[in-house]
Image (cartoon, rainbow, N blue to C red; front, side, top):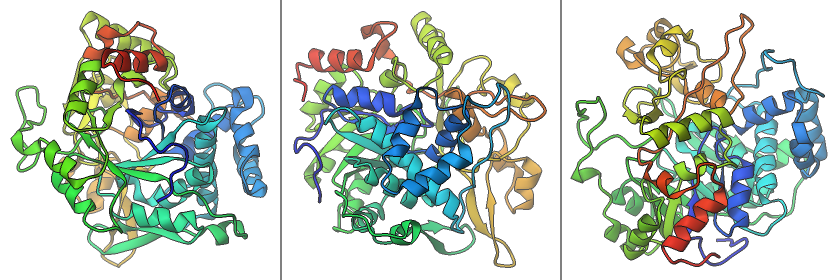
Length: 477
């Protein structure tokens, strides 16, 4: 197992929040402060393409692409998407190829280059640790995305929203530039491979790569033990996530019941047995409501190596959130009006998803009702086998009648939000339609916002780190 930069594991892990909230600027700030900065690997192909179409202000992306080890591939990406001076305000973005089981060379190149660029910029100018976060639910992007991050020397890979049993072997293969694949589950059918073949993609063999460490993000000690059982599935550590963490969370075990506010009820069966995870003998971090000095002290006392912190970093100056939206969240938290609910219906994945109730966003019933339903990005769509054996794709956030025609009941699509478009709008990259309609944002945050009382209003990533480590009397790396 390769160790790229430091032998000592970090105390703080900055959570990988997508789409683009945990961008390279935030990860670099955390890494320079001696902790593990993490970029979100979700939809980096699309964010790179849209930022290039906006003219790449400051030239950061073009600087990263100039360092890509296969220059002709980076040049093709620039030719396809870079617009000098940027597209006019309100102009629709050019689309990128959609994820699917059938390989697309153009998409593979874009995905590899985009993940390389994000990690390269996060690592630029310091020797700290940088990680990348992926979602197991977006398997069709994983091989190419992970290869791009490894080309940039990523130190840690964090994978959640599923069971990342195939990732350790995938890392081994990609470190040697061999074909790397994952098996994608096809509803009503079997499992199909999705792969990246580095030598075929680039037409040359590159020097071996350092193998990054893998942290599996789990919410169950049973799952942790399952992954640790054999070398082929064993990660290098775990992040144990509680239900109050932002974004998606695992559904309650057993039959789902809702409280008076319509949120899932979690019970003793949903609590991670930390002692059983500690007995596995691998490093672990606690996440979801631990982002304070007291939270860190408690985690260390329980045997953890540290904590993962999300929301405090999501609301700092270096965050990728649109500054106006970030300010609205901060003001709402300060005056006590901000509510973050664990919505069992919002996500098309079927997993509960934390939604910040902010007027004018997709959390607003009026805004949601006014949005034309469509699924034009498709990161969360799932493949299924049609009656004739062909592969189709469906998403519970697409038009209800279309979803029903694909063999699913209408109630599965009720109240589903398009996370792909909503989260892109939250970082200022929302699509403008030809008819003038602009995609509204969707905001997610952890449900525990008590950390804000300890931080300056316009706080930085360094403020978050200093307040937690100093309060818990833990030294920096």
